[in-house]
Image 1 (cartoon, rainbow, N blue to C red):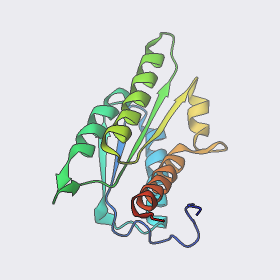
Image 2 (cartoon, one colour; image 1 turned 135 degrees about the vertical axis):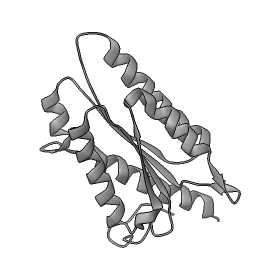
Image 3 (cartoon, rainbow, N blue to C red; image 1 turned 90 degrees about the vertical axis):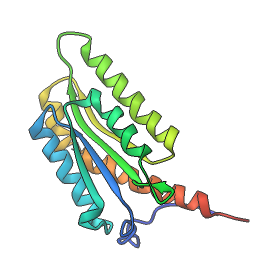
Image 4 (cartoon, rainbow, N blue to C red; image 1 turned 60 degrees about the vertical axis):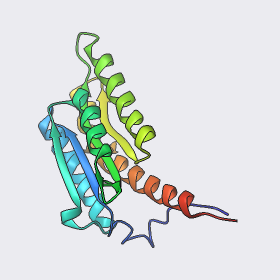
Length: 167
C-alpha cells in the first residue's frame, strides 16, 4: 500500500487539529512574511482560527526550548498540539555566532520532533545576507513559512496513517 498526502482532496484535513507556530522574531519584516504564509497554508487545509496559537520568541536560539515546552503540554491524556511550526531568520555576520545559533536551533527543533513524536518543522531561514533572506520569505525563492507548514501537514498525515495501518 502507498501513503501520500493528496493536496487536492485534503482541504479539511486540519479541521480538528491544533497547531502552534513559533516565530523567532529577531528580523521582524522577514518573520512577518513567513508567518503570513504559514497561516495561509493552515487555512487552505481547513484549520479553525481558534486552533492556532502563535508564540513569539526573541530569536532563533530560543525556539527549541519553547517548542519543547509546547510539545510537552497535555490535555485529556493527549498532546495539546498536533503539530508545531518553527519560523525565524538567522543571517550570517562576521563572527562564528551564526553557526552556533543555526546548529542549536536545528538540533533542538529536530529533538523535539523525535522526543515527543509531534511533527515539529524547521522553517528557519539561514542565509549569508539579507537579500537571500528576503528571497526565501516570499520572493523568487518561495517562502520557507509555507514550506515548513506544508511539511508539518504532510507529516501529520503520514503519522496518522502509520498509526492506523494494518494488514
